[in-house]
Amino acid sequence: MAIVIALTGSISIAATTLACTGTPNARTPKQPPEVRVTGTAPHVITVAWRAPAAATAAAEYGVYVNGGRIAVTKRTAHAVTGLACGRTYRLGVDVVAATGRRSANTTLVGSTKRCSTAGRTSSTARRLPFGAWGNYREAWGGTFSGGEITVTPADMLKRLRTVRAARMRVVVSMAAGSKSDYQNPDGTFNMGMWKARLDAFRKVDFSAFLRDGTIVAQMLIDDLDYSNWGGTAVSNRELDEMAGYSKQFWPTLRTAVRARPTSLTTREYGGSGTPYDWSFLDAAWDQYSAKMGNPAAHVAAEVAAAKRQALGLVVGLNLLTGGNGSSRLPGPDKYSSRWAMSPAEVVRYGTPLIRHPYTCAFLMWSAKYDYSASNAHLKYRYFKRPEIRQAMRTLRALADRRSAPRCSAPGR
Image 1 (cartoon, rainbow, N blue to C red):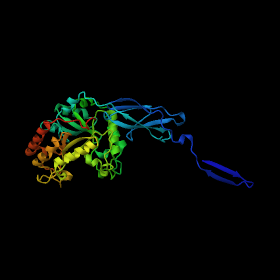
Image 2: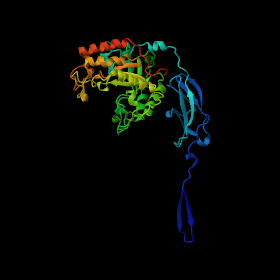
Image 3: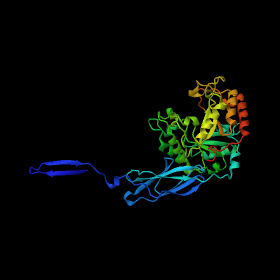
């Protein structure tokens, strides 16, 4: 701002404010020059660029994949990890000046190397993980060969050793935990809080459990419907950013979200009505209930939707609230107005889901109420009922007769 002062014979003063034209430091920085791909691997593309001129010196750089920012760095090179092999990506780099202003994005195209077949036979020859959510120690072994566990940095290794000793394979929930831990006061999703939760695991070395297949995937987030997030859905772009953030630290850890492939395209689940071009998310999750109709037709439709989005598929049954009422067993706690599945339902619904060769795990909801000290409405122990145990043994035998692909689309 400039002040112009005019002096007259009577010494009156008039002040005029002139419009600011800005200073060089407030100008939008120029795009980073010479952005190029300097190296590739089956799951990695390394990009580099030249530092901008001193007049627009960068405080940092943003790195983008398919339009979404996946990293911020002060260096002039970055290795983008966790990519699918044999795929082409739109890459970009922008400059962030000390003032906070961003340059336009310099974009280019890069491709990862083709997938290697080395070691694929042993990986895909593993049996289909069969189990339930919230498996407590009493549930390991026996009927189940898999499960979902929510871990903390303090107990993760101990719990994984228990899983391995029982020769089981699990999906782990690391940052997912309780959604209230990463919600804003208005109930909307807070990416920074979610990333901070995942950061707490960076010093936990669970690489051995990834190598031997004990860990099937990481569940990034649950309850994705917009009604759980203050009326604002967690967008597909945010989901992919979460998956990409995980893969910066653990490139081989598969990422999954508990939402059906057909739901991910809807606005209620953060979609735009068309399939999203996922860069980092590996798998979706289909939890079947009786109201969804014919189970064989249902899983076929979800598999088709997963393939259109280049995603793998975890399946399972909504055991405790997804029945048709024939069991006369009410659901637990706040779900007591719904019905648990009968033994006949368990076998009838579960069989086509397990038999579909595309599915990578079969995990049911939920065992946690069987091992919970507080259980206001579930006056029975579902998994301890003899008829339910027999239905589980029937499905386990089916799961043991088929191999499980990786929890990602073929070639990723």
